[in-house]
Amino acid sequence: MALPFLDTAQRSRPSGAAVAGMVALAVAAAGGWWLGGASREPAPPVAADTIAAVGGLRLEIEADWVPADAAPLIPGAQAFAPAPGLSARAMLVHGEAVDATLVPAALRGELPAALPAPRRATLGGLTAWNYGPIRDKHRVIEVTVAPTTGGMLAVACSAPAASWNAALGCADGVHAVSSSDAKALTPSPDLALRLSAGPMLDTLDKKRVAGRAKVAWRRPAAARSLAAAHREAATALAGFAATGAGAEVVAALRDAARSYDALAAAGRDRGRFLAARAAVGRTDAALAAALRELRR
Image (cartoon, rainbow, N blue to C red; front, side, top):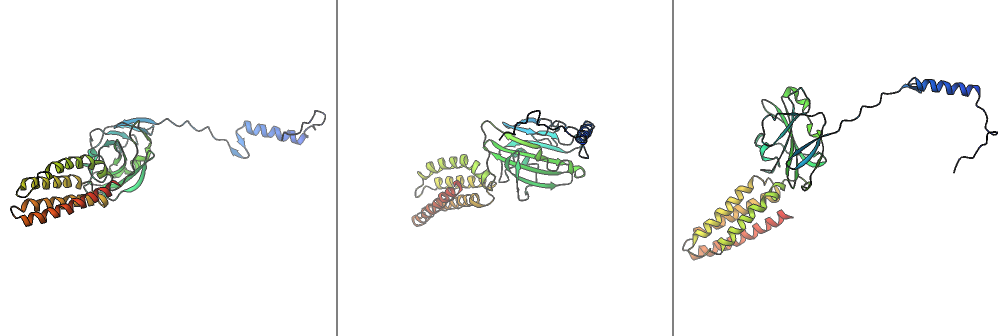
C-alpha cells in the first residue's frame, strides 16, 4: 500500500535539533565516517582469468600466473609460475592414461612407480583425484588429475622443499575447464582399463574368431597362437587393472591363455585334447562374465 499523501499544510517543520542532527550527519558522511566507522576504499577490480589451451581443453587460470619453462621438461606441457620470482611451477599436462592412476603418460614417468592412494578432489569444477605431496631429494610434487573422454587433464604443482608453500594447492588456480566435444568422467580404479580395453579386446576377438575355427585335434599351432594372444592382452591390460572388475578380466585372460596352452600340449592324445577343450570352454565363459562385469 502506498504511503498516505500529506499536503503542504499538514507537514510539520523539523525541529532545530533535528536540523542540527541532519547537518551533523551530512558532515560526518562527507568526511568519510558513518556511525563511528571509517568508510573503506573501493575494492580493486578483480583481474580476469588467463585462458590456457591444452589438449583441446580450455582452461581459465589465475590471472597472475606467469608462463615459465617446464621443470622438468614434459612434452606438451604448459608451465606457469604461480608465485613469480620463486621456483614453484604449475604444469598443465594432457594425454592418455597409461595405468590405473589416470596420470597422463608424459607426466607418469616423472613420478614414482608406486603412488599413494588418491584422494577425491576437484579440478576446475571437474571431479578429480589428487596424489601427494610426493617428496624426493630435489623437490616436492603434487598431482591433481581429472579424466575426460578426450584424455586426462593433470595439474602438477612442484617446487623445491624450501619453497613448497608457494606451489602447494596450485591446482586451485584452475578455475574452470571447458571443451567443445570432451565430456567429464568420474575417476575410478577401473576407468583407465575401461577406456583402453576396447581396442585391445577388439584385436583379441578377431584373433579368437580366426583361431578357434582352426583349433582341432592334432593341430596345436592354432591353440598356441590363441594362448599367446590372450597372454599379450593380459600383459597389455595389467597396468590398468589395479583392483575390482579390471583385475578379474586380467586374471580371466591369463586363465584362458593357460587353457589354450594345455590344448596345444594335448598332442595326439584325444582324451587330453577333449579335456583341454572342455577347460577352454570354461575359461572362455569366465572371461565373458568378467567382461560383462567390467562393462556395467
